[in-house]
Length: 146
Image 1 (tube, rainbow, N blue to C red):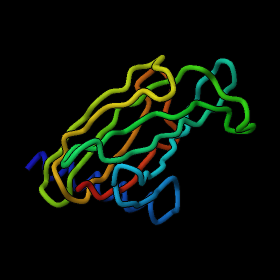
Image 2: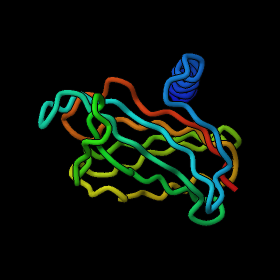
Image 3: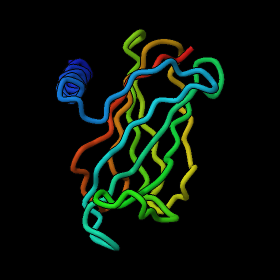
């Protein structure tokens, strides 16, 4: 029952964000086709608000790879750092009901990734800060894992 409630809360949050058009994307997760999501963070230093971008693709059958691509100033997107705030990556395979969580650590270099053994199906992915930085808007997206 507890897992059902969490899944329903996840669905509700995802639907609300998608409906609002915030950082949502759907794509076929093939080796060369990515989907993009962003999360917005209070970072404090060197600037108060940042965005962190992520992409995802299929690493191999039934396994998705989520990569943090950059951490940049939200108001001047040309100002980017050579490190990231990392992310807690939560996922839910809507086709099978499987769920999981992985972490890209705080301070990871852009290009760092985690592999998610989701199995094939439609997978919802949510990113939130793995550091002390407060997440303002989590990254939420959907992908099809083959």
